[in-house]
Picture 1 (cartoon, one colour):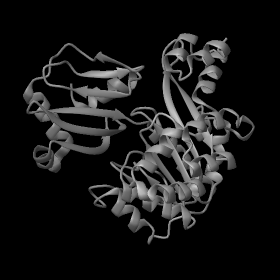
Picture 2: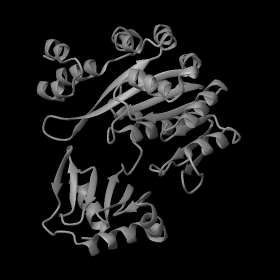
Picture 3: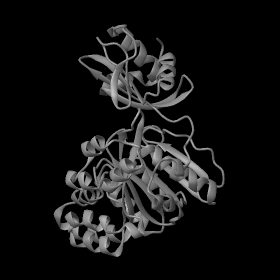
Picture 4: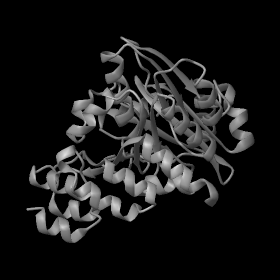
Length: 347
């Protein structure tokens, strides 16, 4: 099967990812589980041919450094592709993206999350493990801004995933490695590009985080992602990137610029498919004080008691999904942080 045929088959079967590994049949991930797509075992030549076809002129780069990120359209679907060498042979991990950017209100986010696109400055973080839908949420947020506000959006991505069709906004999408050397270089440059909204595909390092905070302080709305499992972990991750003698100052700056943190998980629905479970930390005065004081263990309690302002813990999100009949109680317990809470309230 060709790459186009594999992607088409995966899309029709509702799969999220395709994996090509030497010595195994082509596989895809459906409802979170890895399954064979056919019985044909891939040879080294099959894997090399697939990698060369996907990478094109960049294949030599992958050969030299051992991995390569790119994006493209295959079988009619926009995909994010990661090529990497294992045991001397290329492997392919291919993520299918939605064919169109979904409406923000269709994702199952907490209601308060839908208002974040109305912000004009500050930092909004979307966190979660790989494959939790962070890119889709951010794309939907930016597209909502695109359709409702006259602004300039600059994105920094690795690679560019969703392609926006400018409506009311002017949009520049920059790809790390092709359009700019790094997230930090691109972000520093973006401050000279007259942006209103900046998307940072991943806040990986100190320089990027420091510049993102500066951008928010100077009146820009900054969206970014982190691979953390909770809002409090996101705060700790940002602060701990800096040396100890800078952490008090960073906590102060973060407390003044952070507006919200969404933490996402995709959980198995009854009858198949996956549903979004989302924690939302609205940065209230109480949360700002906790960030400044370095008292992040208390943030979860602050979120739990901020429901009137739109806050929601992950366990509260899971309980809602059980009560609505979307997921089973057992599934909720599998993903819960405080299992006793879910046992008590997930009826």
